[in-house]
Length: 532
Image (cartoon, rainbow, N blue to C red; front, side, top):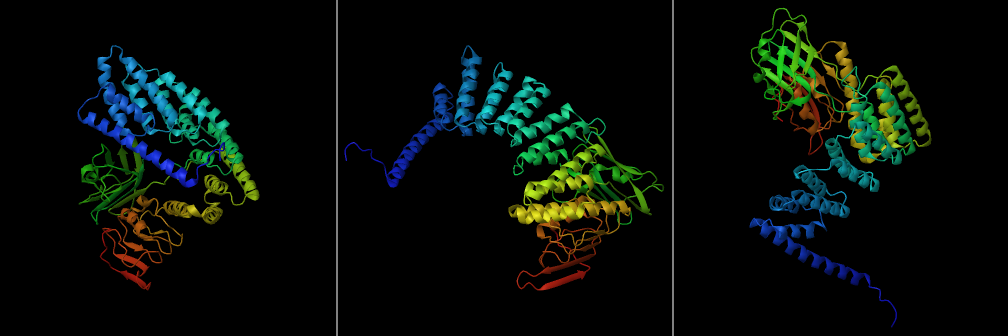
């Protein structure tokens, strides 16, 4: 009827959109073909640059076109009387692209390239640009990355950036990038003068713990502050250090392991073992496993020890001159061994422990109102571990078990975390007992992973029975170089499970379910171990 607006049906609307999309694809492909043809002909002229502008202005995420554009700019700057203007114009174009997509990797990268290649660069202007963009979206991590880059170029004082981070966090606690940036600035502003391995001073740590508690309890379901708290509590990757060392002259075998994988033989390291000249030949050591970088290294050769091994030690000197030491002892003739107690977290002073206890109490109060709050449950476990990991061990395991049901999508993570902490407890007890070649008992801990495998390098026997280990877990047992007896019964291993070839292994216990008929079979014998 006349005078009435015709409303398209859904089918008509879908057909219209499809036709429009097809037309855009035709135009896009034609433009790309022209770009590639001119590129092949090495015609990096203004026409080619305009072609890239027409495409990138609508879709700035095509890396190939940015590369072509850079070739055009480099050629154009040689012919222009004012080369700076060429780069300034492209900064404006890049900013236009960022308005189309503020999270375009390619556009931010191209902006870095422009500034690095321009005759002059206004770095402070770039800092101001980041401030503007972060007002629009304070969680744009691309812009945060770019800000850290230009701040370093502009030599902005860390105090000023720290204040900026604080402002952003106070405006919105759910800001991973700002919390992360804060963790990079704090070691510069408030370093721990007594312990270089600790990132910030105890006084500043106390302030940060109070801030993070306020943020966390403002929105317990947001993970940003909880992750920052983990960093404050020291749950980070360990620094490089010596872990274990053992020499057995009878077996013509030596092993050394580290907290992190290194290229010992070709990485510029120096290894010195007092009383063992053969051990000092770094080129003779071989990595355990197929990689040239490993946590555990072995020496298979005639090894002689000095008659007196009192005060013997291992010294590792890194390429940058940092020394690491491990004290050794001789439990019997022809054997020296040493294991360094791992750092399972920071050892806090009494003032910080009191703050942690207060935070734990707050977590417990919150759990009274929200018993299924996953972040609160996990944080309470982390706090208990930081306060007294042995005293709270049972409660910590209870919290992790509850998290398996509360947050079932991450059940595997909580099981692996429980496994890691269980191994930490057993390792600590084993090292404290002082017999560093004795059997280590890891049975019945519900282990799903094997962390700290490099600390198994010196033991004669390992009991891993009654756990939940599967085939992919047993590969780390290759570090157990001196293991003679290995018990893997009552795990989730199959009868054809492949066990790493250990040089001294003579007894393997493996009870597994057959894949076909699930018949339990026990194997206990002197075995020829399959190579993993």
